[in-house]
Image 1 (tube, rainbow, N blue to C red):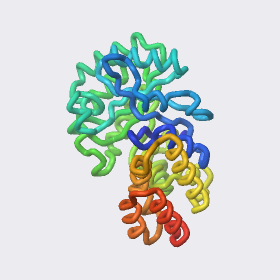
Image 2 (image 1 turned 45 degrees about the vertical axis):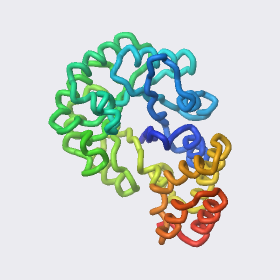
Image 3 (image 1 turned 180 degrees about the horizontal axis):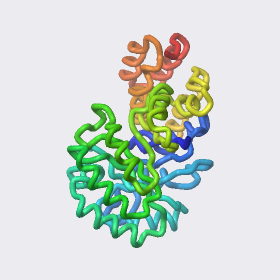
Length: 312
């Protein structure tokens, strides 16, 4: 089974990837949170740091592009290829954010199949890199996906990563596994699954139902349990020692590249919103973490949480 780490904007940047890779090293591909091309064709400082080869040593990383302009995609892909050495680019057709879909990007682009097809014709005709696609199954209705899949099947997509929810679901409701089965049966390109694999039990249930799937992308599941890949691969449950090592590596990484207690704490609090429930009796510690305004206060409560509670 090939395991991928999903691109989660604001969370899985290069600091996170390096900390995760140093502690767990069970991911076959790390997808870099999306680059949003601008009119000048320049990368933001965050985007530059994220794609630099020296910030991704020892990892197979795939940059992701969010756009509905074939010209912008091609210009950005060319820059990623020639300046940074990337040979595979991922197209984001899955982001459900309202600010993204209002501009007809991400999963919002799925509501315009004719324009989507023209866009794909434009990029596959001229791009010199391999292109994979991360997609939802429609904007408002799963019935949309039959037409969307017909379009994908016309092109030499390296891999189709399917999150079987529509845009209006956001992350509510359950992934539509019936539509995913339809996609498996009808897709002419390799398929990867993404969606709600939070535990070894989730993984086992999914692979029992879909034994032909050998590529799975993990997103929020890795934030809720960073040891999930190791448990899937080696049947080794997460323990506090390795989790503490991961936390400290990540925290130190942010302290090195960010300035100001508030900025560093914002990044760590975002992680704890996912991670805290992995501990027993975590609520009072999570509240103190959320209220922390100084690094020393944050460090104190985290030390107490690890010392006083166990993993569930």
